[in-house]
Amino acid sequence: DGGITQSPKYLFRKEGQNVTLSCEQNLNHDAMYWYRQDPGQGLRLIYYSQIVNDFQKGDIAEGYSVSREKKESFPLTVTSAQKNPTAFYLCASSIRDSVSRGYGYTFGSGTRLTVV
Amino acid sequence: DAKTTQPTSMDCAEGRAANLPCNHSTISGNEYVYWYRQIHSQGPQYIIHGLKNNETNEMASLIITEDRKSSTLILPHATLRDTAVYYCIVRVVSNFGNEKLTFGTGTRLTIIP
Image 1 (cartoon, rainbow over the protein chains, first blue to last red):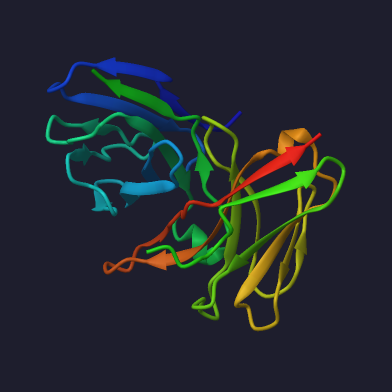
Image 2 (image 1 turned 120 degrees about the horizontal axis):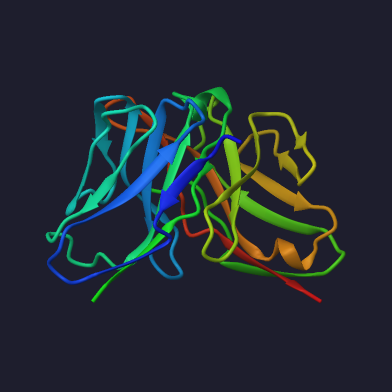
């Protein structure tokens, strides 16, 4: 079955350490996205990529970095520069220009990051 | 930057129809309206989308007003499993011409037994 996989589901890190969250999809989607969600809040866009080797900053990119070396993978690194990294992180994918063409996003099940 | 307005919360009795409103008064003529829902601590799930006409699928119906400035998501026979946060979203285009979905805070729907 095709889908989008985020791992791990729960992640704990010490303050000041960088941490990388994995996102893999086998849907042959061109576009991938990272969102952050804080308790009781909506989703905020961190980074997105419409094609391999290209990505754009979202609304809250500071303290995060991404890479898109392969179509299937879009890892997110939470750096020590991110002041409040504890949150629920969601990865999504879609065909390119999906929104204007009437196609939705497919979301992963999320990674809950806790920094202590 | 959310372009939609939704009530913060709603309750609905189990078995009744749940009607979730959304205002999108600045929507452009070629922009779709999307609805997603998120059950606690899971990724959002796509429900339905529409452009001008009303739409129906196995999960819900979407009613879009003629001027397209508002819409209503209808869950015809709500069950306890429909308790979730429901997001109404329209497309946003970045300065680079890339499109993206911007999620607001949504409506927290609680189904009452």
